[in-house]
Image 1 (cartoon, rainbow, N blue to C red):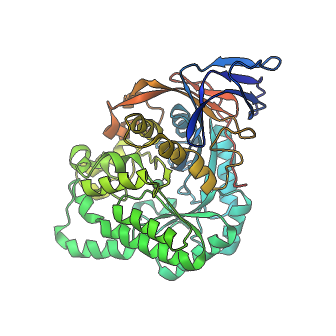
Image 2: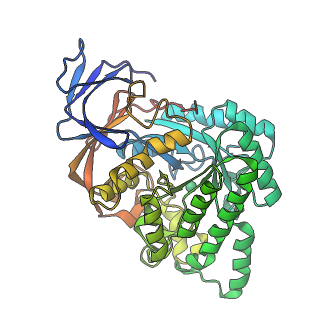
Length: 463
Ligand SMILES: [Zn+2]
């Protein structure tokens, strides 16, 4: 759906750009940022004026790791509810992972998903593909269809979810090597879920009949070595292939340091982490049971400390939610046997709010946080001509944010269908308040309500 909007003049706000907040009036025309004007400069013609006095005008957030899985399992989420959750959290572009039925392993499946998302989504989106068929025709067709990047899982598909993971998991080293070379040839980023299948099986064998089924058992099923080893493998293989490698949801200090080592050795590596890894520690399993179950698991306090330091020094350069909705029934089976609960928790409605809270509390520099949520993912995935900042020519995706306000999370009010899945965050109060979300000059979210139309979202392709 395309909507015609009048010009907008955002008055008296502090616009975030290049690491600082600048007092400037922002002129928006035809859904794009047209001009930065001196505060109080006369607005052209019939521009609608919006007073942002005392507010921050931030670029719309980009969430580079998101799952709604549509058209599969709409009882968990669909593009409509997932993107409402995005809009309500200031995310104007999300990158949907390729796990669906069928998995997105070629251009045809990607186009079908685009068609569905463009009917339902309230905000813009990118679509990942997966190279697991190891067929260059599939990989190239996905690129032609506009894939934002590729995703590989290094562990085998969960046995009860085989339908969703077709063409997405690669466990063999030789296959991985070939897949990375195929993706390298496309110039797209390859995101990797780094948990090593062989080591997972070895750990299971080691635990044998003593394997624990209570929630804390999850930590012993997937110890740090599973992720550390897989990350080392894929970084080492990236060196030869020249692929732009991106490590998804890293959870250990060891991996953060390896990413830095890889970069120092000329490997084109980036990394992301999620709020749950930097805020919580492994006591979540005891406290929240299956609702604290994510892969990789939330680690002990030392890793949390190391990850926070890695975010602070820019080693982890992209901040994501890994929003992963499931139904209560699916999660609750994990109460009796944690192995049976799927891994993942809904997070998009907490992610940006949490990180901005942390910046407002002085835990992280504001530019580190905002860049990790906006320009860094835009540059990395090649959409920075259009997204991730508010310089003239960019899409007018922006947020009005009150740094003096606050937000308390009541999970019953979340827009995601999986709201009860977010119980780790229930009752948290964050500094700062998102007042409104604008997509290409259109108001999408206003003070608690979704006001933009379904179907406004468009596929964003790398430039
Ligand atoms: Zn994920």
